[in-house]
Length: 484
Image (cartoon, rainbow, N blue to C red; front, side, top):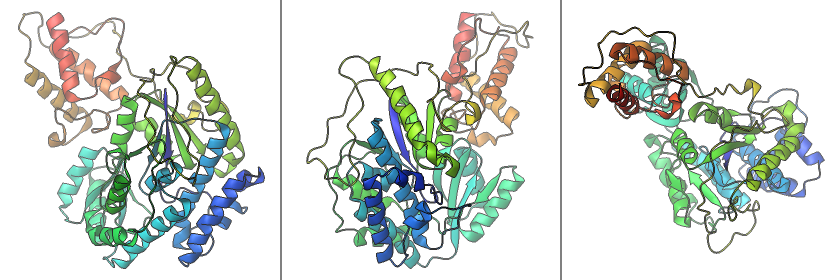
């Protein structure tokens, strides 16, 4: 059971929430806050740490750019330091947008000061580009649907900036184009909202700023990191210092393929996803974008939960210890790098063992990150036989339908049931990730197809979540036809 540490991006800080961590006398947390403050002051933004450690009764709006671009960075590193001290292990570090540089810092590829300086230069490069007014809009729809809406607007500046999962895709572009997109989304009954990010990040219109950033950071030292870091923007692991350089050059213009990253790591055996940052945005995305049953642990979901970080980490360590006792000899989690410490000269050897599937144990005990109750996670849908199924097409003639015919039937059923544009439903469209099909709707559509084909419901029930694409579902129907 592999564990993924997820590092969020801008706005993922909570005013005053780090105060309990400092009360526990963590010298390394104080030292890293001092380093981030020094970089922020050097860029003319003042101190960042007071926003994070001084008591606050409500979430304060950022007073300067440093709070937005360095507040989340310092928060995540402080929580990572507490996780390291707790003894909890991890297998993969995964950053979201600017959080990729936090992950690289935690793994030892970048020094704390250098990474904070890089994030500051990243903002300043965009500011110097002097582009027309631009921004980012989040839409509550799967990728294919959002691509269709952007095509309707047909504005050259619009680009898919972030694919978070079946329930959220972020589009960036010039403000007039975003306004038209929001009107089209409203007409299509797709909810949208403008983000508080002050430019069109992850968009080719920032190519000039990307070149400036690469030039401005050419002298930043990149060490050989320890542990595994997966980059959603590059779509692969960070393996060499050149990979880090490539990410720096691409960070402003390439999309964040977070949904794909989550799915890839899940397919490798990741079952525990820990949000190493404030709030619980990434853990909510993991619950919605992967299979049901994953363990999602937000370390600091709210200011009121700040006193429970140690308890949450203790529960995570217990879960991992229990899992480790059941692993074959020789397996285990990877080493834990120290924030800002000198990295090894040679990369660590990656463990190749395959983690066992989720074993059905309960959520991580202790604290608001438990995945029961308010998590919203659902069990895999299954189909069990009802009393009777009406037959619309006689079966048993020994012929059956071709695979192409069945795929077309599945497409038409999805289009009719979900009011989807026909062109977005393709053979490899994932029902949940691409089309936003809920487990309940998938079951209802499947039963309707059984009725059309005159097939009996499967006896004993089975897991519908296994059939992820249009082609998968058509293949299942063809198999059932042949066996009937």
